[in-house]
Length: 142
Image (cartoon, rainbow, N blue to C red):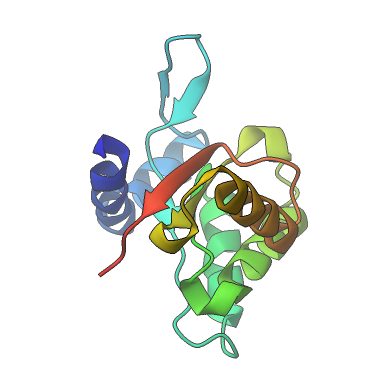
């Protein structure tokens, strides 16, 4: 619940303040999780409302990564699944190693239950073209 509230706040912060900070520091700010794993504190969500016109998602994601952003947020419902494909392409084209980037995706509320959740995560992995997600959130949009 807390992360679901935090991501929109981080996205707003990123839009207004983070580009200047990241452009000057060249490294994202992180917090340490309980096991010592660093997690970026600045992320950006990428939404494509029209699945046929998602080139801006790919472009903005690439720019975010070039500026030092390292937490990408998406969902299978964004752009009818095409947003995740474009984010995956942008990550591969960026030259940033996957291990440096946190990817957050969402499980639609309609996909609850072990088998449905696993299937949705596997579909997101395929759409993104990655082997793992760092964060999977329950998505109750609208």
